[in-house]
Image 1 (spheres, helix red, strand yellow):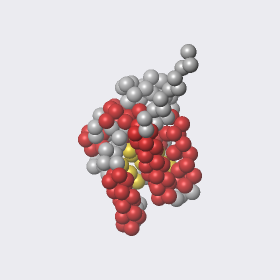
Image 2 (cartoon, rainbow, N blue to C red):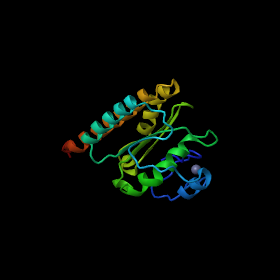
Image 3 (tube, rainbow, N blue to C red):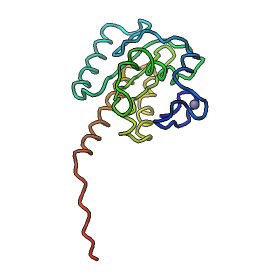
Length: 189
Ligand SMILES: [Zn+2]
């Protein structure tokens, strides 16, 4: 993953960023105690109407029926603007119930989307299981597709793009694993 603070690429086995030293303890020191998150869909600032919430829940439930190994978390709230927004996603993902109840390492297929509709920012964190399946450019492509919607204040549309993109990536990976490799042409020599 990219360091949410300085954007340097961090290898999976690193406990902290080799460039700026960011880890969960330092995120805590910067941001303070995390809100009491239970995972799932969380509206920290009462910004989501009940019909919007029902729509999000329906999409998340359908996704998780298709992929029971994936836990989808969506956190909508208002966050200070004095730190990189990705840092809040990192902090929420690794703290509280999301971090403590999740499988570890390559078994972790949790997905977190954090949205601040007021300041039109969003950030995402994925468990390491996803990072083993996906290329960096795929991880970056989802962002370039959803960001315009978030910037226009259409965060729900951004959420749908985010969820659909990961659904397609998972289906593609699954299909690739099910397809046996083509046997090599016998050598004429
Ligand atoms: Zn860093």
